[in-house]
Amino acid sequence: MELKRIQIFSGAQLKYIAFISMLIDHVNNALITPMLDGSGFLLYLSNIFSILGRIAFPIFVFFIVEGFFKTKSRKKYLLTLIVFGIISEVPFDMFTSKTFFNPYWNNMMFTLALCLITIWIIDALKKKIKSKALWYTVSIIIVIFSGLSAMGLSLDYDYHAVVAAYIFYIFYDKPLIGAGLGYLSIIKEIYSVFGFGLTLTYNGKRGKQYKWINYLFYPVHILILGILRFYLNI
Image (cartoon, rainbow, N blue to C red; front, side):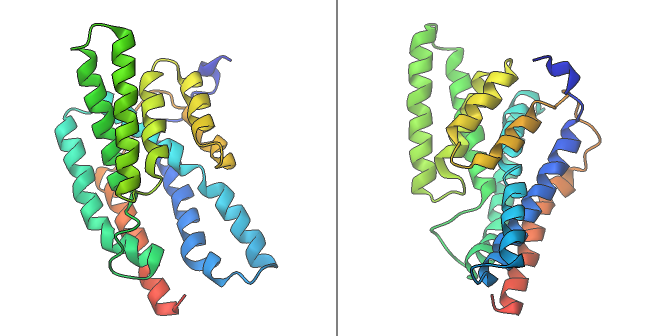
């Protein structure tokens, strides 16, 4: 497959595609799914929204790995994810559970932060462990530990995100293999194939990005959806 022919989207364009997908998915989960009565137009609409909503996850995980390699400051990148994870938690609980505190389901910013920490540790060990076989063995152990931590912390997408990030990291220079194995790692979400496929359209250019929109979009839109859930009592 000649990837250059389909590498047409910048990082900014792919992120905003992911934002739209995420918004569609969250609208479905917050406002449509609670009102389903088993059949009819709403069920049809919910199914379409659910399919479109599967695009976002692979793209966001893909760009965590991309950001790891290209950010000017990994520490600042990680801190920003954690800070916005904290900011997003109450809105996330309002949106998902119609409560102000739910320790049994925590937001995606924390998941992405854990993904970044995981590949950072693995990458640091790569320089210290001379044996490739040993390094791969240790890296898999770290991924297992991080995956279990994600499950224990009840993070959104739990170990699936950690595994996908690891695959994107390992096959950073082989995007077709990375996307294929990444999809297989979460194949139960069958329509995520569209998101993994879109990572192959990345042309390596950053594009015109709006930093604060990138970070504020997540907490702001789930806060609005959370308020609507309370207001509409659904």
